[in-house]
Amino acid sequence: MKAYIEERVLEAADYIIENKATVRVCAKQFGISKSTVHKDVSERLPQINPAMAADVRRVLDKNKKERHIRGGMATREKYLNR
Image 1 (cartoon, rainbow, N blue to C red):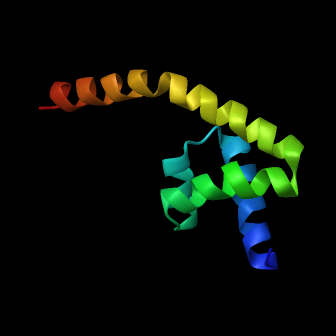
Image 2: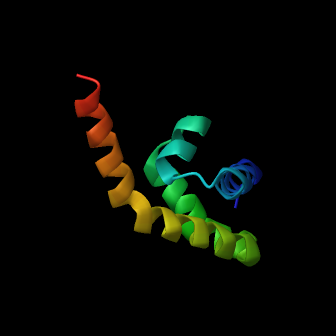
């Protein structure tokens, strides 16, 4: 794996863990696509650092469980601010 890809993977993983960020937020922060972030943390990271990959997986699983709540809150805000 190229060094710049490995560095990007570790930076994205670190950002997700520290900020409890979603894939979308991480992608926006680093200026890359959601698909790239997802591939980095789900396929490449386990090869580089399995322990960090497990931490990222916990954060992403938690975000996935809560996403319907965030969507409902966003819709509520949308209609309250009209």
